[in-house]
Length: 500
Image (cartoon, rainbow, N blue to C red):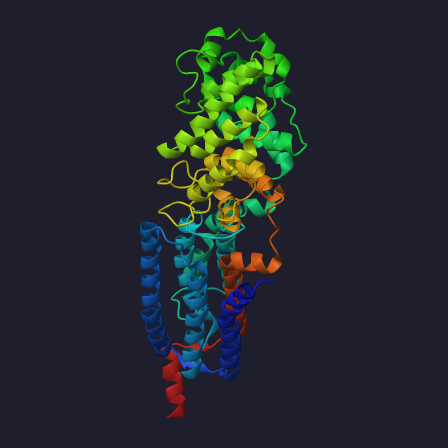
């Protein structure tokens, strides 16, 4: 257990505990009294004025966070809102105007504002190990519960002009809220699993072969080889076009699902072999370990077309390539992974040990540890100047599987990048969900990666924890506050007449 995490959680929980104590104390001091309608309207105007400032500040914080590319302080927003709610309740209690309906209506306004902000920010600018869409689920659940409480109590909040109108206003958006709840909770009730990943690989309904390859290779490596009979014809078509469409064939070969006997059916590659191991370029680096080069070496090595001397030439060319590519600035991780796989295939037994320092340096340089506009940090980039990319991240994790995890890589930040995202499922990005899941599973399987303890997880998911604590405070406030009786103008006149 790490002391900073414990202290952080204490600071996180403190405003909610303080708010609970203060609100319960204020609720006990409030007597059940009748108030005049004019007093109610004045209180609503005063509270709305104070509440409006907070709404404006949060509305400004939202686009500012997007434009500056900084992490949106979700937990802090909930902590400050808890303090604001406590202040509102204490102020109303001092003036003997604390009413559950009035407080409920003020909370509903702010929940609607918060919902707009968090729906927009749920994919970006958050750190956490769990799907941050849970924050939206908590907010929507709060709104639905408050609406149900309001309806059960007989209609609109204190001071509303018409009960019928108030009920209609509450009922109309309920369908929208339910759809939103269903949409953003999908990773809770229908999470990605190894079985679902296997189904995706075996049917391949959408996405690119590159994404399919990442998921398929993890299944093969983890001892769950997929049954590819359903898409075998598509695989064969891509492999037969290996020479004309190498970019589609290379991922299939990299997935490790092609039997070496298939290579014998392919035409000879005398011209390609000549380019690889003879002629003026035999002692030079490749421009990059491109898919065409990867395919040719895999096929010819699988068929045994290379002599020991030719294998040595290719290993030397691959070594020159990754050293030179490291200076170009794009695609280093993918090139280093492809070169490593080919070198091992060609029999370079000491390759990993020889290039460990170079690969570790590249991994550390390419992890995106700073927040960027509309991007999540934690993953690995194809270039130092770019943001995180799932393909580069998957390559980086495979490299760490071979070379070990360097000290400079933030594993927890990488976990945060690979966390599930509810929008992926409903926006037709199943392939990205599969890539994230497979990459995270591979990362967790590495011997250098330690599992996350419950205290650490609570701290890293502090945004979700803060939203739940705020939801509890809201329920305590609404359910524990008294209901005041509002005297209309005629009631006031009648009361005055009796007193005279």
